[in-house]
Image 1 (cartoon, rainbow, N blue to C red):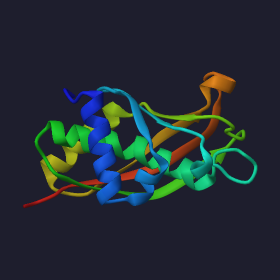
Image 2 (image 1 turned 180 degrees about the horizontal axis):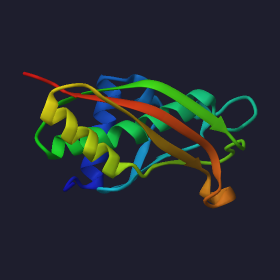
Image 3 (image 1 turned 90 degrees about the vertical axis):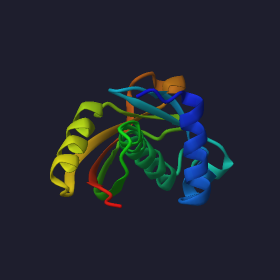
Image 4 (image 1 turned 60 degrees about the vertical axis):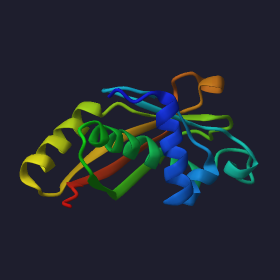
Length: 159
């Protein structure tokens, strides 16, 4: 993917502002985007935390959504194809309270490539779970705060 981080973050902000305002409200920022991995940071601020001063459950879901979906959108854009993307199922395991900025990491780039190859070849909808791990590096290093499995559903969008 040839997309620069500046371009990716600009596209994420525009998508959030015009299509999913809750994403825009949480202010996610892409830290890394390559063929294998995406890392998205959501800062812990007044608008993203709960009454316990940890990241609100809804904000964690937004972070998992962005990390799982942005890579698929970017990979499709790099191929010059439009896709219909949705999440069909989600499971989350909450391990510790995230009491600082959270980084959401998805390492399923190869799986997403296979999904895109299949939908482009068949025209059918393809569903696969992708894993997103949430960490608070400033407090706990690489120890997971939460782990999400989202069933990503992609289909080539016909014009």
